[in-house]
Image (cartoon, rainbow, N blue to C red; front, side, top):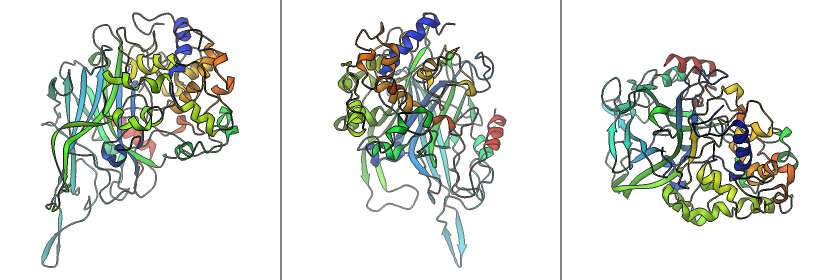
Length: 534
């Protein structure tokens, strides 16, 4: 089995992975991760998933959607399902982007740019001798795109940019029904307004043609149930958890709740054939997401009647959100540089190198947990540099890599069916001695099922140095002697299980959003609707 034309044998890959995965800092979902973005929730990037599509794929990696890559960028965190009357529309004065580097030089080669337009229909009712605008997003039931009862119609435009995101060649993607605007489904208000939300949402999955690409792509933009699992509150309360539980993986789900399971999020999802994303013989792509707003924003003291008229904007685009690997800015980057990281580009990541080579998280965990001085001693953490900034040689490192922070995926690695995926990705499959190993998961991209928190907790506390015990990639410093926690480092978890989060079996993979009223979504209906959309 080979991962790419230059890939080593499976045995060498396994050795490389065991050594390299110690590189991961503790990561998770990025919610309100920096001071400034906390005040701009509509452009706050929360999660980025990039994986080889596994919908309908057989055990040998063939069939179904094999050969396609799914990209999902989530924004606007912690949405309560009952968030009426306005719900959670994205910002028409912003741009949302997914960037792809396909030659390893830390610069975007492809950018998928999303813009939004929210149009007020101005539905009115005759009240006495007056005609009065209604106060709600809807005036009745909804079952189709741009339904007559929707008072605000949400649309988005998609542009593919080749080269630099601002100066490259930009081409608008056409809606098969005509024009360049696509309807976005209204959020899941409730079952009385939208009786069958899965079927309604499925009408907003579009098959599109991309310039320079022979294979059709899919796009969906809309609200989804939060797909990330984390014991969020206790973690940031100085890890307020029983150390006897979180150091014993047999006790996962024993004493913690998924803090954000009852939240929704807004997803920008694409499924693109790998031949349209890669360049030449290079099979590894790097990806990250950003959001940008206009440089000037003035609060309108006397806003006119209309929709979202309180702020005037102008000037050039300014990046305010950035996300590649999960939770980098939340628990790796120091507080003084969080806003700076959100405004940065991968080519400038050298300025943040100390946060990777000398991470503070192991020392913080040692200070708040009754485990003594548990920080690994192999400083500087060159193991972190390998996976965090370059990718793992033979797995997901480009041939001509320039060190930079982004999520990297080898598109040549066959996808694994959902039931065969190891929730701990590559580290789990190697720790558990699985054969054949699951090499299609985090940190080789990120699937919705991958429990990046648990993988990363083990890695940052030296669990993979414990397994590797010194390897060619990292030299003699990454050994068991550098791991004060010993084998316990491999037991660490946050108390919740990513693998039990409800998901769809195919595009857009993330589950139907929770309704504001009327009960939970029916996953069987959702699956049927998604399949019917193809």
